[in-house]
Image 1 (cartoon, rainbow, N blue to C red):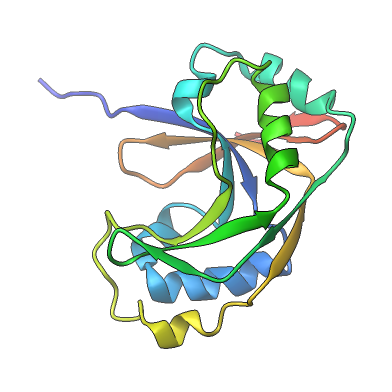
Image 2: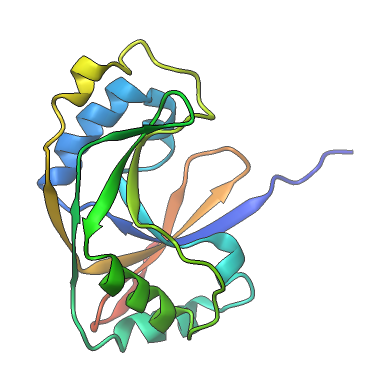
Length: 175
């Protein structure tokens, strides 16, 4: 008997260009496994937070967000749990959490710190995961996020895009 792979869905803010390409090169050096699974992003809502919510309800909230794009500034790379590396959000967290509350209709119980993961500690440490490689990362990265993506992962496979919507705009299916 085969066991069906678990399916995870999240709402995500993918890093926009031109920074997406630049961060992807760094992510491939630091953690090629993570880079192959998902692009550089900030997780907006985790799977347990949106479980039971319909995509149409979620994207109705995204489309009705009146504040427009959100801006966040990310600081110097920080190591965590050994060889994990993230860019912490230094400015824009209050707006990010207001967006989370808006999309989730105030029904989440935990604070979520915005960050961009460059290397995940669950993956093997890459030979390219060095302090020298981290020096290529900007000291302050200001990004504007306009699009929210609903993504899905089957088992440990790569994440795939299901639907996107513009903050204060319209949603459209991708899959």
